[in-house]
Amino acid sequence: MGCQHAWNRVLKKLPQTALQQALGVFWNTGYSGASLDSIATAAGMNRPSLYAAFGDKHALYIKALEQYWAFADAAMHEALKDTELTLSQALMRFYEGQLSIYFSGDGQPRGCFAIGTATTEAVADSEIREDLSERLSRLDADLETRLQVAINAGELKSDADPAALAVLASSLLHSISIRARAGKSRAELTELARNAVNVICG
Image (tube, rainbow, N blue to C red):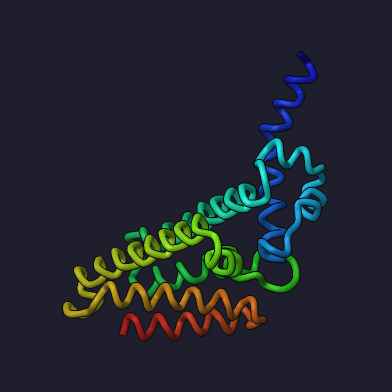
C-alpha cells in the first residue's frame, strides 16, 4: 500500500517536471527529431514512467503544446487587455512578451514553439492542424478586439479595418518567430516590431 501511495505521488509530480523537459526537447529538435529516449533522458526518467504519465509520444507532444499555449496566451492577454496602455504601448508589450519567450532557451533562440514545430506536423496530423488553426484564429480575434478598442477611442481612424490590421499584426509575430530561429538578434527584432507598430498605429 505504501509503495502504491509513493508511486501516486511520483505520478502527480511527473506532469510538472517531465512536461517542461519534453517541451524543451520538442522545441529544440521538432516533433520528428525527438525520441522518447531523448525526452526520458532530459527528464531524468525511464520510458515506462513516461508512458504511465502521458501515453505515447504524440500525447506527450499535445500536452507540451497545450502548456506552451497557456504560457504564451497569458503573456499576450497581459499586454492586450491592459486598459491603461495606448495601442502602441500594448502592441509593443505584446511583441516584447513573446520575444522574451522566443529567447528564453540556452544558446540559439528557438522562436515560437508552435510555429517552429506544429506547422510542420499540421500537414499530416489533423489534431495538430485543427488546434493550430483554432489558436491562430483566436490570436487574430484577440488582436482585432484590441484594435477595435483603439478605433473606438480615436487612436485609429474610424474607417480602419480592425480585422485586416489584426492579421497584419499576427503575421508580424510569426515572422519574428521565424527570424529569431534564423539567428536575428533580439535588438533587431524589437526594432522590426517597433517599425511595424508605427505603421499599424499610423
